Image (tube, rainbow, N blue to C red; front, side, top):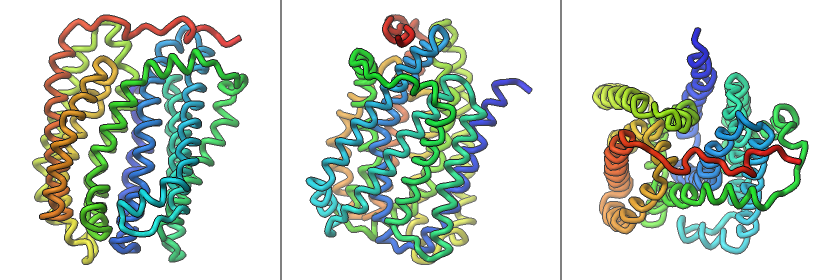
Length: 431
């Protein structure tokens, strides 16, 4: 069996199980939680994902670019980069946590029209920290191409998280605070296990080198800006819906997102396999053929999924949705084309653009933000959750279309410059 296929199975099997588990747990939660509570929980998890997009996805993408390029010449130099990336994550989370008692309650009340609950905000920070750390653990295994251990780490994390939430549901204790506690404890436990077993080599030295932090920041500055803005845009539907409508409408919308997020998750998981191949293929001058073939298959599969979705969903809607969430069925149908557009874009196209043209996506999001806010304001005030869903899909399809056009044109050109260069101090062993 080809080694690449084994790696693919090791990564995708826990992801597929995680997707199935996420869907199953969410279906149980919408039977256990009121729409208001689901809206509240979804807002907290949106905060976790926002932090992960800023300090997780952005930093990890830049770290992957530097660490994977230097690992072949100097594993120790790669460890230096990865360790300092974790330092940056810890600094950011410390800053966010310190701000919670000063701005958290006011921000929460402004969005939800309810008194701020600092307990939920601190649990959100803990869940975000755990997610950031487990991402760093997996990044080390990704750089070293130890995909069996990568999959094992993912699987243990999922078992702990889903097991804890499932136990809460059985005991009748499934409330937002307890569920967030599971989201925090599961990744923190796995990250601690990694740091004491497979990550020990990275922590043999802990000295902080400002030059390394500067180099990482120089590499990820556009990633940070781009992912911060795009993450806000991708989640402002829920935030603005709670602000301009109410938590009940946010809960109806969140129930729809439970299903619409599945294609995007598949796209994200695919990028784990495809991301590390981009820079070496560019350096070898073989990227265009790889991009053309892979992206053509992705687009064909997405088109087939879109055609099949509507008749399949009409058969499943009344079976999977409880009566109080039947209004979410229309939301799901509207959100799915935008979700599939994300599946078509993220595994390869978006990662490629972030590596070679990071300013483009940021500038595109900057240009679209005022228009989107105005469109959300009108749609939410007139149509509630369904209006937010139409606006979200319009934005996702438009963004994916532009990204595809630019990526296809850029992939066919000769890419040169400092894309594959890692500065000398990144590659030398730590002394």
